[in-house]
Length: 477
Image (cartoon, rainbow, N blue to C red; front, side, top):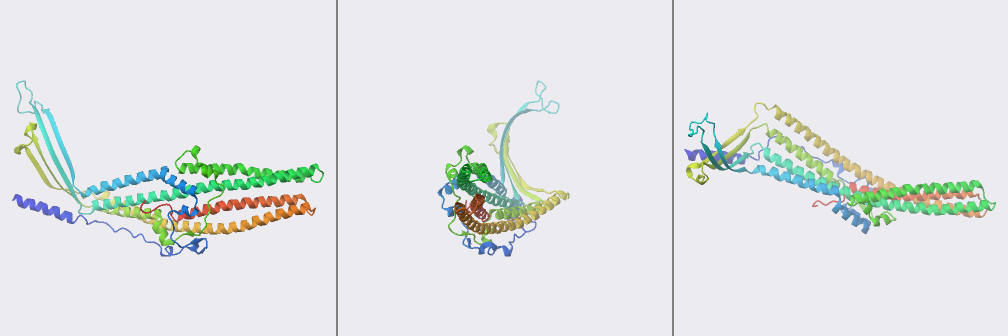
C-alpha cells in the first residue's frame, strides 16, 4: 500500500514537470518594422555620405589622437556609464534570482530550548507544585518545489531575461551618448578657439583701421565720422570675445565632467585646440535595416515589449492554482544525544494547492493592467523606431545642407576679402571715401565670423549623425 502511494506521488510530480513549460496567456505581440524604413535613407543620395556599414568607432575617422584619448578616458571614468554598468549587474542578479524558481527551495533548521508549562495546564507537577522544566532539541530539513503547471515561473524568467536585455541596451545607449557628447564638447572647445582667433584677427585689422582714421583726422584729411565709425566697429568686434571665451570654457568644463574629472583638471590639449576635427572622407551610414538593428534604444524598446508580454502570462497564470510538492524530515528529542535515535526521526511529504478561487477579481484586474502595459510597450517600440529613422534623416539633411551653406559662406568670405582689398586701393587712389573702406571691412569681418560658425556647425552635425547612427558601442560590450 505504501509503495502504491509513493508511485502515485512520483507520477504526479513527473506529470507536473512535463507540463511545466505550458504557459497560459496570449502570445507576445509582433514587433514589426516598417518596410519603408529598412531600405536606403532619403539623405543617402548625398555625396557627403556613403552606404558602407556604419562604424562603431566613428571618432577615429577624424584621425585626431587627442579626441581618441578623451573618448577612451570617458569610457573608463564617466559616472553615468558606471551607474549603467551597476544597474546592469543588478538586473542580471534579478534574473539569477528568477531562475532559482526552477529548483526546489530548501530550508535547514536547528533548535534547542528549555520550557516549562503552567501548573494550571500541566498534568504532572513536581514536589514544589510547579510543572517540570523540559529540554527539547530539534534538527530538520524541508524542501518544496512549485510545479509550474501554468508557466508562471517560466514567464517570470522570460520577463527577467528581457529586463536584462533592456538593461544591456540602456548601457549601450549611455555609451553612444557619452561618445557623442565627449566628441561634441571637444569640438565645441576647438570651434570656440577658432572663432576667437577669427575675432582677434579681425580686431587687429580694425585696430589698425581706427588708428589710421585718427591719423588722417589729425592730419586734416579725415573726418570725425570716420573715426567714430572705425571705433564703433572695433568695439563691436571686441564685444564678441567674452561670449566666445565663455563658450570655450563651458565646453571645457562639460568635457571635464564627461571624462570624470573636475573643471580645474580640464584637458589642456582641448584648451589649446584651434580647429574643430575634420573628416577627409564621406560618412558611412549603411541603411535603415542596419540602423534599426544597431540602435540600442530600439533594442531596449523591443526588450521592454518582451518583458511586458511575459508579465501578461505571469498575471494570467495567477488565475489558476499554484501546486507545490513539499516534504520535510528531521529529528526531535529531549536530549541532544538522542537526536540520532530511530524513534525520534520524523518526516512528512505531500502536495499543496493554493488558489484564490472564487475571488479572482484581483487577478483579472492584474491581467488587464499587464495587457495595458504590453500595449503601451508596443506603442513605445513603434514610436522608438520612427524616432530613430527621423533623427537619422534629420541629421543627414542638416549635415548636407550645412556643407552647402559652408561652401556658399566660403565664397562670400573670399569675395568680401577681395572687396575690402579693392576698397582700400580705391581709397588710396582717392576714388572712394573711407566710409566705403569701413563698410567693406565690416562685411569681411561678418563673413569671417559666419564661416567660422558654419565650420563649427558642420562638426556638430557630423557628430549628431554619428550619434543617430548609434556609433560608440559594440554588441559584445
